[in-house]
Image (cartoon, rainbow, N blue to C red; front, top):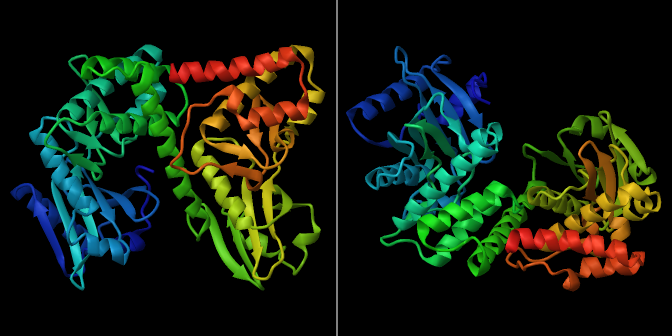
Length: 492
């Protein structure tokens, strides 16, 4: 978080600015002076000048630097050394910080507003790039696109997305492809009553000597559908397509181009989610992984390794149906691979599909089945249980909500290995009814590279559910109407 007190010693040790081998490229003499000041502050461990601004997953750290006696502050984006294969690649292509530095210069030449990169540096270690950093001005008081989107009412949101669409079309016309658009990597300010958007996080921008092709534009709009909207419908999606179509001369408001962009977004979301499964591989910000007495365990940090270890008496967990650890109740389930269940849970989280939390994965080194711990929380009912006690006045909301949920699963390529009625849970929340998935290990998943437009009659999930329930024609119609309404709203 901004203004967070640094873990001082670790921060200065990670920055490694006191080590030899650093090389810098600077915008001008004042940037060179700034680099020297930064190195001096790091070497003297000046805790007033250097503070952690934001920590992120993986290699990146962002520090806030306030040079002694100066009013201007700076962001120092710092990367720990990459793995060996990437470091070798960086000998022949730009590293992240180097790419950000040169992309900022190129965007300035093209008159596309972007955060300035004042200096870039890396430390050589055995002739390979190791730590690296890039220094940017800290734009105090300017908010991200994401912050304004959340704060604004509908009319101001539309103005914001119109400005974004205009900027996007202008970039595409100039051959600029931002492959990593995210709502928190765009800054926004008002100039002369109009929104000016400022690009940041430039390390994945590519430049072409011609306007982007239609296929590149389709994929870039798909990226925005994935990262801004999580592949769900929003009125702001219409604003984006409407204004972009007007600015670019290509019609994404309906038809083949719109459908291609949306399906590209679905594929990109599934690829991102596929990578998210790696969170179950090793200890990180979400889980702790450890071994104990013939077991390999992964446990959510909300539960904690120390609290769990007290229960790890040989064979004890296998005899329990439920357990409470650190105030969290979990249902214990046998599965062929508890790690795989946790991986699929992380996959669903990244897709934005509600599912019961997998907090524990215990796998034995022998051939015994694994044990997964799934958070109980407020007990939800299966579709079968919920529909059996359904009051007549709740029926319309239930079947409409089910139709929408089945559409979402079909869009994302999620199917059921077992009973649909037992695999989907329902619970009442303040906003109405929530549908969620019971067990990730009992689901099937299409390959990340596959996406198709959902069709009610062709949906295996729908047909399987209808066979299980044998519903009256009126209720089937309600489900179908909700399913088809979602399809028409998105794909036009």
